[in-house]
Amino acid sequence: MYAQMVKSEGMKSLDEMSPEERAFQERIDRGEKIEPRDWMPEGYRKTLIRQIGQHAHSEIVGQLPEGNWITRAPTLERKAILLAKVQDEAGHGLYLYCAAETLGVSRDELLEKLHSGKMKYSSIFNYPTLTWADMGAVGWLVDGAAIMNQVPLQRTSYGPYSRAMIRICKEESFHQRQGYHIMMKLARGTEAQKRMAQDALNRFWYPSLMMFGPSDKDSVHSAQSMAWKIKMNTNDELRQKFVDQTVPQAEYLGLTVPDEGLRWNDEKGGYDFTEPDWSEFFEVIKGNGPCNKERLGARVQAWEGGAWVRDGLMAHAKKHAAAKLAAE
Ligand code: 3HC
Image (tube, rainbow, N blue to C red; front, side, top):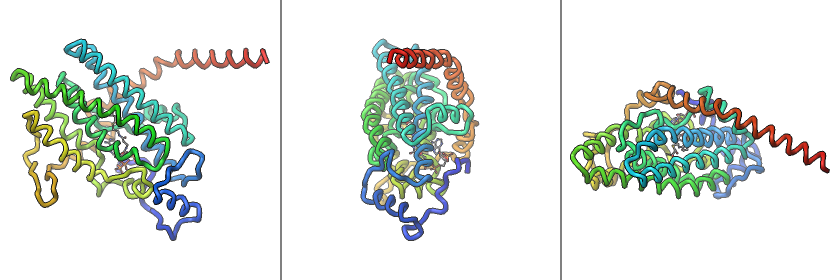
């Protein structure tokens, strides 16, 4: 449902594979890294382009909700920290676009697909950031969920993606801590500040749980992606780990997770919790979330507004190449 056409259906067993496919799968099973010039099945290449491209777009679109607060950060120090974080996200996008380019797709093609709505970015960035506390909640919960998903991806089978993730994860953990630090300040502040922190947690809790993707029964790509080690865990496994890690952090802050069904379950050694509203998730990824139009509009405007810079650079590169050729 609402998925691009790289489906897990029709997964082959080792016996059904061609000799090339079998040798490839055995390399993955041995834990070897696949590098850009190695032979790979077309589905592996397409799935990676889809996932890495979507991930790159998420980093770039993800700058917008926080960029919104740079001029309104309460102190010079907070402004400098937020600015650095938003710049880091641009860097993450660039590493990831480069990793995708090693698979034979250009950055322009990926951006065209984002701008025309053919490629997705993370659902979370279609929610508004209404107060300063949202900067805390985004760092704590959104970057926290991103780390939970991305730490295992450091071991993903595709070399360039795995190496990009190592650098990204180091920076994401700084992002998560700066968000938690904002929440600590607010949670220990005045009554109005505590209310603002609680309100941010209330609004960002379920959208953060949705970041891990649909429940396993509706995840069309997980089985094949896990066999190829493009994904290392299922969506539900990571969501459970995130809840188990985050609930004690909310308790430490003195805030309440907005879920009346939240209970520690001794038997499973984790929390039972209420699933997000999946109909809301599917609406958001279809383009009908609270900020989809605004976010995509901002990216398209930036692309069109920057055309003269790209044209100028290309003209300069051409002139430089022609002058070099003439001198030879
Ligand atoms: N937002 C938007 N679309 C989502 C989604 C989400 N949170 N979760 C799933 N989907 C989409 C999938 O892309 C797929 O649609 P598609 O075929 O059109 O691409 C469909 O829903 C079905 O979901 P599946 O579970 O079958 O899809 P995947 O196997 O791709 O799993 C995923 C989804 C767990 C997000 C996986 O792609 C993944 O691990 N991606 C890499 C990490 C990533 O992209 N993170 C973005 C987070 S934000 C971020 O990193 C920025 C940081 O600064 C905070």
